[in-house]
Image (tube, rainbow, N blue to C red; front, side):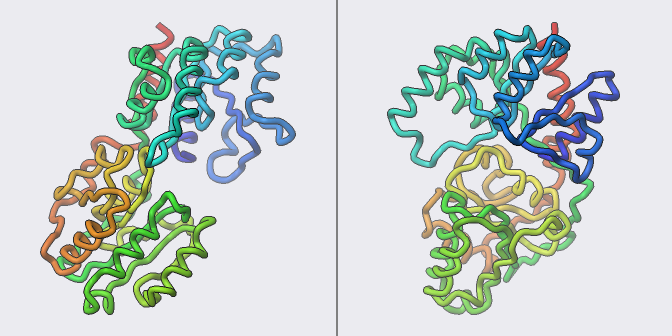
Length: 341
């Protein structure tokens, strides 16, 4: 989201719109030094914002929240202090099995109590908008809208030639259980020995589940297949070194790594969860399999590796047309204008 925040702030300045950014802490890397950032590490971001909003000199026309829980007393409190248009953006994926019954009931009650204080609900995918209505009630439907996440494609190097047989794979993910890397490891273990001897998968990312994944790789004697590369800030310049990206996730809202991979002309093999199928069309720019279905993934890997299945199209144009930072910023500016009318 860094690139979006920077570009949105830039375009707002060009339109003579002043923006204050409230973050949990300070940020100075990249273009953050150009933003008007307010923070107080001793307080929650909600408490600090409410205190700032209560000051007589504070007068916002629009308030946009990212990565905050939606339909909470915070939104009621904001409306007691300000007449600003309230826009809540939902980036959060839902659990694979759905929320427990008690949590579903609590969310529905919160929707009845607090949704009236939110003027627009933005989902980063059609899946997210559907889940918002499921969480908080159909009565919010008229206030919901999709604005897809976008990426800066200029930074992404493009692969020009894709191997039709014996492709090389990468995975780019935060290493936690819900990302499903353990399913990938188990799927590889089911492959014929001849493929396992040659298959190479680089895993980029770190996280709390890394050690468990490494132990599983060792237990299945697959060290020659998997290379844990750790986190890197250079991933955008590395995608093009690979033929396919693997993302066996159990839950996803709308993946930026999928968009980046496609922008590099690297098709994606991923699951049928969240907003994945809004970017990936099976057999066109990637392959879809059921989340947690290791046998399906094994079958896909075997056929792709042997050349029985292959993606021939250039996957970059879709991203250029639908999922750029410029398009994302433009749509947020449009909703500001629409909500002001």
